[in-house]
Image (cartoon, rainbow, N blue to C red; front, top):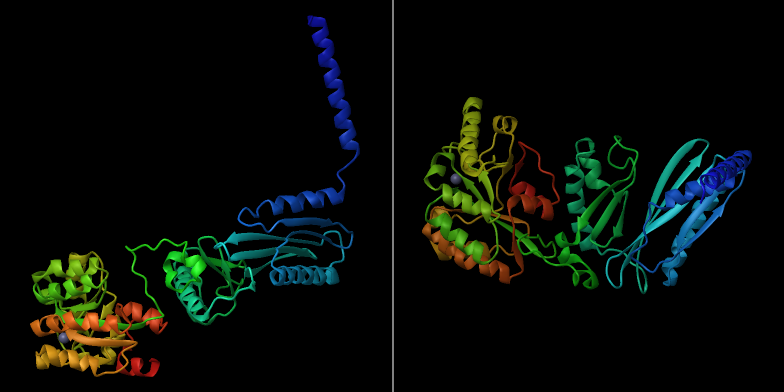
Length: 452
Ligand code: ZN
C-alpha cells in the first residue's frame, strides 16, 4: 500500500468515527436501556453455578416504577410456588407504592447445593421508593420433596455457634446487645455448600449497622446434628472436639492441684477416652507441677484458679482477695501463657467483697463426691452413680488423691457408656445452659438446680 493510500484510508476512518460519535450523541440512551443496564450489573453479583435452578430474567420499565427480576425455576413444585409467591408479593407491594420512574425494584437470588438432595436459595431484593433505598433477604431451603425446616437440635446448635460468631465479628461485635442476641428470633437460616448461614435482620441486634448481619456456621462444627445427606459429605476433623448437644453433658472438676502424680493419672484417663475436665489449681503449688497444667491445657481441658493459698475469700479483706487472685494469675500466666477466666472459691465460700472485686466467673458445683473425706475409690464412684441423672451437673473432686485418680479410671468410661459427653465448665454453661456468664457472679448449686 502506498503512503498516499494509507493517508486516504486513515482520513476516511477518522471521518467514519466522527460520524458515529455524532450519531451516538444525537440519540441519548433510552431510560429503559439505562434501567436494564443497572439491573444487569446488579444481577452480576449473584451466582447460580451450584444448582440447576435456571434463572428467568425479565425487565419491566415504566414511568410509574420499574421492576427487574432474576428468578429461579425449580422442579420441586412446593419450593417453586413459595418462591414465586414471594416474588409476586414483593412486586405487588412495590407497584402499590411506586409513582415515578425513579422508583425501582430489583430481585435476584443465590443458590447453594448443600448436598445431592438439599438446596438453599437466598432471594435478595433492592428497592428505591421516593428516594429511599431498602434491601431485603428471604431464604428458602428445599429437598426433592419440598421445603425443609431445620430440626430443633440443628437449629439450637447452629444458633449457639452463631451467637459466638456475631460477638467475634470486629465490625459490630462490640456494639451488639447480648440480651437481644440471646433472645432474637429475627433471623433466617440458609443451607449453603459449606455451612449454615444465619442472617439476622437489620437492626435486630445493633443500631450500628442498617444491613443484615450474616454469620457462617461451618458444617464441621455441627456435623452430629446435620441431615444424613449433608453429614455424609462433611469431613470430620478429629483434631477439633465438638460438643454434641444430643448427648447428656457433664463437667468433672478437680480442685487443689496440680499434682505431679495424680493430675497426670487423671489426664491419662481423659486422653484415652478423648474427654476433658476442668482443673482449679492453687497458685502456691503450680510451680511444683507446671507440666501437668500444660498437658491438661493442651488436651483441651479448662484451667481455672482456686486462689493462691486456699484462703476463705468470704472472710478475707478486699486487699487480700485482690492479692490472692492476682498472684495466682501471675504464676498461671507464666506457666500457660494466659490468665484464667474461672475461679472456684475455696470451700465454695463467696461474699459480696469477692463478687465485687473479681473479674472472673465464680464456679461452684452441683455434685460433691466428698472424695477428700472418704479417700475411698468405691465411695467416690458410688457417690456419682447414686446421683441419678447427671445431665448438666458439675461434679466436684480433687486431683491430689490416689483414690480419686482410681475412681476416675472407672467413672469416665461409665459416664460415656451411659450416654454422657464430658465437657469443660465453660462448655457446659454455653451448650447446656446457653448462659453468657458474668464476671463476679457465682454459678453454684442454686443456679444448676433451677436451670437443670
Ligand atoms: Zn479446695
